[in-house]
Image (cartoon, rainbow, N blue to C red; front, side, top):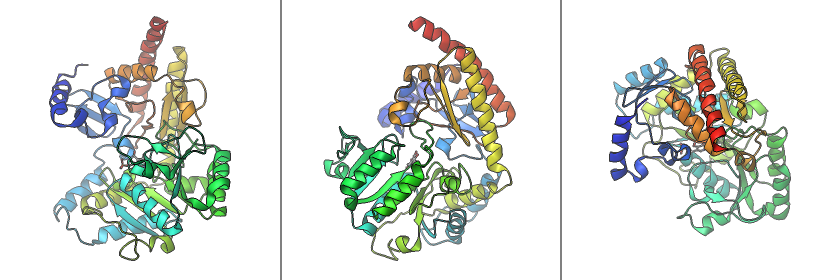
Length: 435
Ligand code: PLP
């Protein structure tokens, strides 16, 4: 497979766009490759500027649960275009989407629409701080909640130290109120709350982590967070930007039977267009302007194209058996990948939950960021490039999850497994040469 057009566009891109991309992971640096410039998508497939076809497991970072160009979404967009692209006013479509979210998530009585997951998490922290009158935020290492300052904190030197800025440009003060603990470690949470519970506004968590590769919560972890936060008068925030409408109609909160105080949504909610949201009980959400004093706004929030695409997509997810079918396809894929790698003698551990999965190049189960970081990221890069050469577009980092969509039919799954068997051979030879 050759990529002359991608190479040409990457040269041009680097002149006018920092690093040539509009979001860092798209640069493919983590897999020692160059960005592939995609031109179109359909069903489970992407085509690049050179006309190469790929089976896509990035799926717009999880947004495209129905695959590319899902007919229901295309029809809604076409219909919307005839009416105009946006008015900056209230529309009935926003109400319908909000009603649908409230119906799906029992913990949500009111919801505010925004344009990205980052806006949702950033705004939800402001609300949590306003509601509790406290500043401290607890997050978990390896969970990503968008790029707001206080959420880009890195763990300090000890479990109970304050966060330190995770990137230049984040003021120390913004990170100081953020505490970063290991995922799946309730003892650490318990200890932190014992020491300074009365200064902590909220715990924010990906209820199923998708940003250190796929890492499900250990039994009791989410229930423990619910219990600890309640005892200390802090809010529990589920960041369901990935898991909302992805792991089930009622998200991870439905799957695990936990009622968070506040919920963030994004990705699937917009049917592939830019939509985020945050919601919770009317008592808390009523503090958002103009109902209350906590300011938050957006020029394009509730944009009709995005909202109607989201509505059309979500309505498809109600089909009986939708989530079981999706999980079944992902389970068959996970099993096929395990066999391919095992046959080649390549150390691996494939984690799968619902339609999300990650091939970790480590033999141990991965329960937190420290475990994930034991994975051989160079091996992942070899695997990524070997799959790319065979027409499979995997997440370009060991620490991103693969997403299976409803458009991934058996032919696509079996073709992926066949490509993986060959790629596993490449990996074995690479391992032998490495010594
Ligand atoms: N929260 C989670 C769990 C995410 O995975 C992401 C993005 O990947 C975000 C928040 C931020 O969303 P966005 O990229 O739409 O700003």
